[in-house]
Amino acid sequence: MLDQRTPPAEGDPVGLGARLMRRKPVERLVAEGGQGEGGTLRRSLGLWQLTMISIGATLGTGIFVVLGEAVPKAGPAVTLSFVIAGVTALFSALSYAELAGTIPVAGSSYSYAYATMGELVAWVCGWCLILEYGVSVAAVAVGWGEYLNTLLDGTIGVTIPDALSAPPGDGGIFNLPALIVVLLAMVFLLGGARESARANTIMVVVKIVSLLLFCAIGFKGFQSGNYEHFMPLGMAGVSAAGATLFFSYIGFDAASTAGEEATNAQRDLPRAIMLSLVIVTALYVLVAAVAVGARPWKQFSDTEATLAGIMKDVTGQSVWATLLAAGAVVAIASVVLTVLYGQTRILFAMARDGLVPKTFAKVHPRTGAPRANTVIVSLFCGVLAAAIPLGQLADATSIGTLFAFALVNIAVIVLRRTRPDMKRTFRVPLSPVLPVLGFAFCVWMMGSLSGITWIVFGAWMVVGLVFYFCYGMRRSRLASAPGAQK
Image 1 (tube, rainbow, N blue to C red):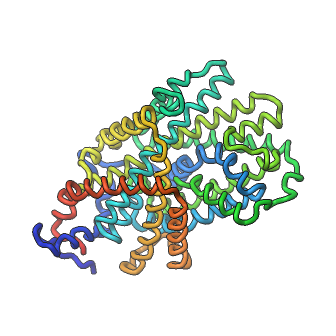
Image 2 (cartoon, rainbow, N blue to C red):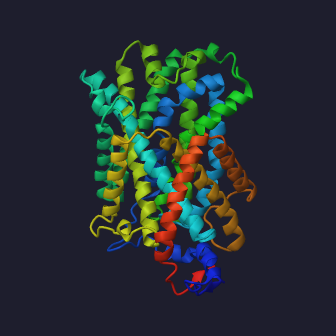
Image 3 (tube, rainbow, N blue to C red):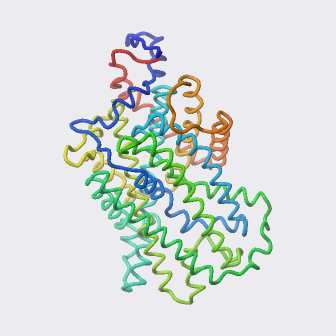
């Protein structure tokens, strides 16, 4: 039986702590699923669409550029680094899978924290997710123009001038392609979840085919001698590369933001999260194995489009590099679409709880999409990508993501203790050992980030706490409920 009590009076000094720790019962979270201002989200996504959303958010710029950074650190053992990074992501993925099946709502880790650790922790988690999703959309969109220019140059021999295709600080004035790709994603999202999922599925299939095409062509240049010294830089190099590669896995949690638009969320969300992680890991390892087999590891560079360069080396023709550039253009567009989708759904959940303005919870009755939310977020991210030098701010997405992952691992343990009899369609094996390991790995990786990243993260948290105490805490719908859980 839940312990429900009336919230303390506004001026009660003891009540402040109680208000900060008030939890939203799981039953209420689930009961409110899909409800917005003026309409409801529509349940139209099955297992296939949910899996494609996670793959779309995860499989993007990482594999197209990350090899050039990781191979010099690990040598041919970079394939092992991908496996290590995948296992690290797996710990948090298991926790996400359990909570997504138990609390199938739109807020992802924000909602999980609200149900287990209280409103203040939930707000901090949601604020981290805004940083993760919002800035990562902008950061990914910035790179879209580079691949678009490669594609245009290889097809029609024309490129967009640097002044209009590069971000400020990199020789540009206004990154027009970055704004365009965000606005294109906005158009799809305004059509509704089903239409967005269809477009994303097509894009995911295209980029998977592009990577498989690379493997097929790259295998023709495979030389077993490139693997003669498998671990030239030792296990330390493998670990260093693994830490770099971990961020190629960020995005698998995107399906959890679709909890209120899934036709059978409790069954399909855990499956989609785990299936997407397996598919992405298999593709990463396969592509890395072929790439290292086709080119000696000492010839890899972080200043080159590695996969395109290998295809050109093997075939002697630039047409294959152009095809891969086309795949990269589609891949990045898919990431922008799915991550932008996740951002709007998290803000939708926070607005429904009263912690951010209710405009973000308004749902269009015809499309079932949060229109105002989508337009505001898209314009913000588009302008951020096109006109603002991101610099270290982009690196802050990593720390925000890891912080949210760490909280999800804690939430699994807390919910197991407080609600042991609750129905769970998926359970983390060996709990609490694996959630503790997931938490430890996240903290370890946060500690490896630069000092400036921590400063940016700290400043972002200060702004978020000021907003919460001045707005969110006073307008929280849970505070005005007949009973609020302590």
